[in-house]
Image 1 (cartoon, rainbow, N blue to C red):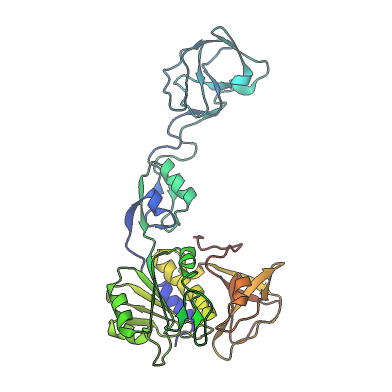
Image 2: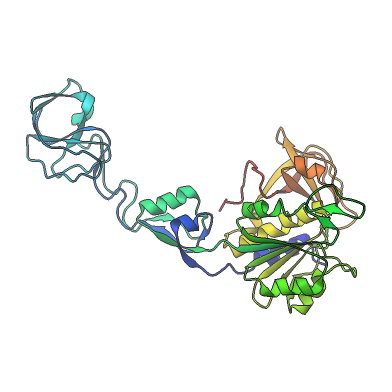
Amino acid sequence: MRTLPEARRILAELPPLPAAVCRLDQAVSAVLAEPVRAQLPLPHADTSAMDGWAVSAGQQRWHVRGPGAEHPGTQLPPLRPGEAIGVVTGSPVPEGTVSVLRSEHGVLADDRLTPVPGTPDLQPGRNIRPAGIEASRGDELLSAGQVLTPVRAAVAAVAGYDAVSVHPTPRTEIITTGSEVISEGLPAGGQVRDTFTVSLPAMVAGLGGRAARVDRLEDDVAALVQRLTDSDAELIITTGGTAHSRADTLRPALAEAGAEVLVDSVDIRPGHPALAARLPSAAMVLGLPGNPLAGFAALTLLGAPLLGALRGAPDPLGVGVFEAAAAEALEPARRGHRLVPVLRRDGALHSTGYSRPHMMRGLARAEAFAVVPPAGIRAGETAECHAVPGHQVPGRSVWDD
């Protein structure tokens, strides 16, 4: 059995998925494997910041040439002394431009342009966005290890990129097990409702993965071996069957499939039967206990560093982690670390209750699991907290780098 810090460290140190070049629209949410640099100065030309006229030097009255710019892409011929030409916001200003006289600061009579008295628009460079003011060619705009958020993808597009090198989003398959599990209706005696199929795909997405397939299997070792060995996913998440009884199928299935068990179990309550293994195909398997709270606790504490490592996050152990003071004493488990569903009110942590392995009511109100060490946490002491995947939590998010 591994301690919680040991288990998380083992998973966080896994190598990232090999880098691949992906189109920008397909790379959003992935982690950059290489920096993004400006391929041209940004902006790459002197452009107008206003609608109005580009004016030449040394004049208080100009002859207006036409036609001027009709849209930001219009290329204009050079200005001679005493000339002006119409520009629009974003259009390149022609060679010979000293400043841009905004339209409300100029009076045009026939083809003669006169500035209104007192306008500041005759100062050299006024209302002009100089080439390279945002970045020079070769400047690093985005760093390797940053998540390509939608805004960062826009930055790459501005820099002239159609595709970027990223660590791909891990393709994840979810296999829920249990002959007693039903997907619809009210459970009869000996039955339980499936809590994972409806929740895990979104939670995996919240951790930066992509649930490509969700299956449910009966408690059958041969069927589970077949699914594990046939999968082309980079990560397989299973639920149930992680303990050592004759009804539990995951451990014998992993042995038959030739898997290397990296984390056999974890000294946490709830969630201690959780495990992590590597198949001969190099795909990772994260086995979550079948009890709902235990399964979600294991996903939060182990799935975050595992997915963070596979997707190339620079700090997999920091994914979704924040600290806050406990408003009340948080009692320890009999052994190992206790994981307590908590909610922040007025900046302090409060237990949401209902924290036994089979319960969900407390987690429905919680934003995180507080990690309670063997000595417990007294009121006012700081607790390490791990955001429940899929929750919006102020502070550090799964996208922080």
